[in-house]
Length: 369
Ligand SMILES: *Cc1c(COP(=O)(O)O)cnc(C)c1O
Image (cartoon, rainbow, N blue to C red; front, side, top):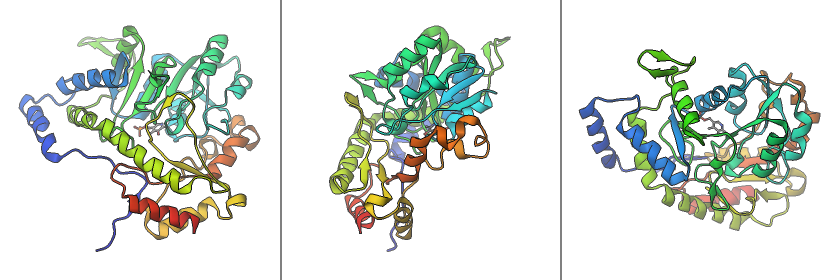
């Protein structure tokens, strides 16, 4: 029998039979969207699981990011990282705001707090950092800078579902945090996302904005958008949540096996989590220094493809290299030396609960052969 291709990720699916009772209930009630029963249940259950107070579900992470910037009425310029999924910067652009790229730190690959201040101008109103690969940003330094300059902080936490620092959810930092529940993420609702806020008033504004700005049947309080999550997606989320601890545990086993088999080889580096972090093992990025290892990232990527193993160059090219952004002054290579280097070294290996340990060994053999 021909072997199935191995992709960088694969969603953990519940038993179909376990989903049918939820569908029957939706069919019975004919309540398909607009804050239905499962939608409410999922918001409550996620607040409890994640250890946060206010969470608003969204149809996807990108619309949640766009709405988060609207919620805080961000304008002018926003400082952000070029080393992320392209939606981080697109969300800024869709608000008519100018993105200002700031370099990342070589060790953790999150926004370099030492370089943020020099990117601030009189037009800067906010910082949009990313907890990249689920590794938290330097949240303490970033909030100090934001306080000093009167800036808002919105975290793109799309990789950071369930991540904690010192026993506290990483989603507690900043004015708002944004999650994605896309099919490729640790926790999924097919498509989906959320905004985490810290007070009832803000949560209310988020909820108005994601529903056209409606406060009630006849009152529209803001030019909102439609970014609501449906009942079917919410029900799927409730089912996903039942197995999430097991999913993260299995991810850890696979993650640890990769590290055991590859660690200590010259020219190969892993990303260490910051101290006091409880990770979610969302990704396993491997950084290949061609000069030292003797083989390039792209050679390894192609060797794996020849075996129908699809590792991914997350995140290459940098967002600052895409045509829409490359002419911004902050997009220059001189402004982003660390990110420019790291994006040429990184390769994210397949990592998901059902990945066979034999396949991990095969992947490692291809890398080192
Ligand atoms: C997935 C992702 C997004 C976008 O989320 P969607 O739900 O796919 O719209 C934004 N930022 C980062 C860092 C992501 O990984």
